Image 1: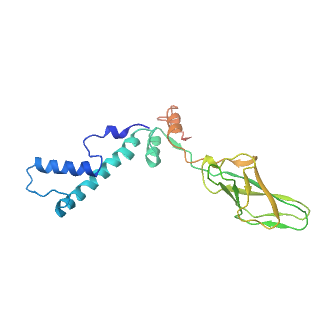
Image 2: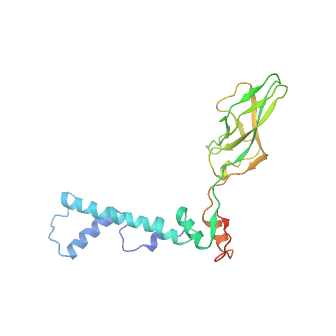
Image 3: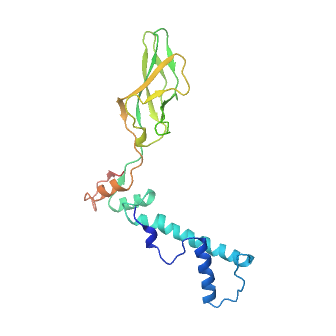
Length: 218
């Protein structure tokens, strides 16, 4: 990450520096305000009114405006603007989509699988990932399993877990003995909205001035 903070000079870094700068400026301008102690209500009010906007401006420059100048560091709407300059557009975020297989011990009767059934992974570094069925399913009489459509509860590559990871029902479905999703049954893997580095690569692909809009991003 670029050191944008070092590029901003002349603005106080915190409230203490801002207050000290205010005292110095008042003296340099020959101000008649004599009580500039931390106990002076008037000076405290003056410092608050002037310090907050200065610190807000500094943070805006460091965290938003300067990164937004460079495609590699821009995010969100600023990255969209940088991409538009090169006639490219970011790929949107998508969720993991696939088939969950539900199993039962016997084969007698129909066993419904409700819409919205949640299937969890075991904790991975303290995080539990979940997929949710997007359509109801039924294990039909004479069969012991059924596949149901499901998608991740959020976007992001972290949901692209290997075969067997999604195997736990936090809210058990009566009659179901096991559940799993296999990587071969995934219809679409998950990703977050693409951001800077891949956008840089695609932006350099020679599309400037072209008419074809190419998906980009990381």
